[in-house]
Image 1: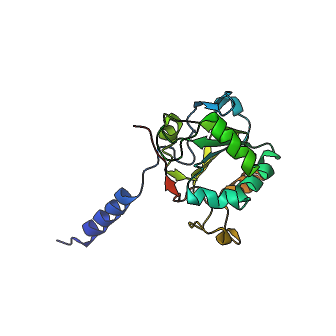
Image 2 (image 1 turned 45 degrees about the vertical axis):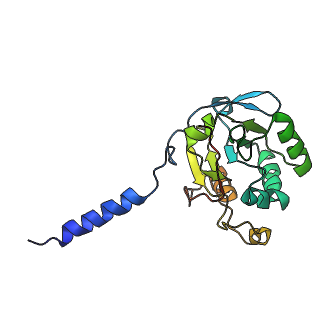
Length: 203
């Protein structure tokens, strides 16, 4: 009996099992949510139907996140894309008492200091929104198209380091996805492995 085909099938099965499962896979409908921003205003994903939406998981103290903010790169991306009508929601899902947790006043002060320009910063101390999307790191990026479909999830770029110098020449998946989608082109890379600090989930 020739067992080689069976071994090949088993090998393929093991590889598939080892791949991380995505709660929200690109091509599926992004889950709706309700969140309150740092100014006390409520937001839902469904209210932005008809627009592109970026969800950016953030943590002020994470060195990977700070790389993008201290360099001015994240703020530049926020301004560039919100000027084109994109809704950009930063999401802070650290639980009270955990690293990265902020009060509304803390977050507003940080946004002002960094000259950040998201549409809003959602405070998610119960990690409810993070669980819906299985957000893993800060940053972890999700891009949703005007029909409510997720078209990208993963890393912001292809340089998983804390070194600001690595931003030069980096392949920015967020900008690439929005540029392709807005011009009616197919998305070349719909999913990557996110990098950064782990999201500090509430238990």
